[in-house]
Length: 129
Image (cartoon, rainbow, N blue to C red; front, side, top):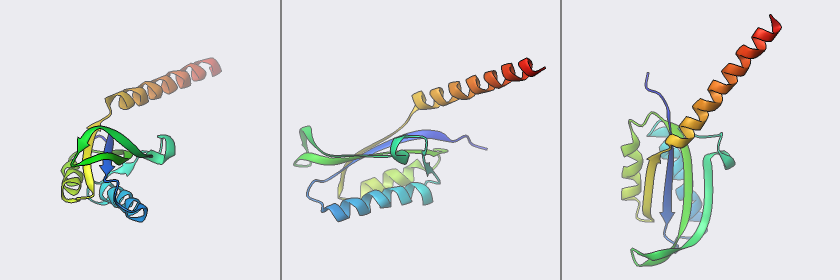
């Protein structure tokens, strides 16, 4: 069995896209993660694994835009089908920039919390005996 990893995917939607279409694109990205990639949103993160930063200015022009609508998705998957998400970003013209990467820091933090919980449980069992 392949272990689930934690990933963060940020994508930027062109600012001239209507608000309804932005919402549809966010929902479509989530469905691609769930259906094609085999992942699930990381419910442990704030806002259920979805952060919408809204419209922000760029430091430089990207595809002739000076600003974009930022969205971040935290999700868990085994990483084998991440290419499906990258392909979706590539063929969707409204998404002008994206980046997906593994969050080692969050995985480490989670393992440390699990270890601490197990240690506390062992200490409690020893106190009872």
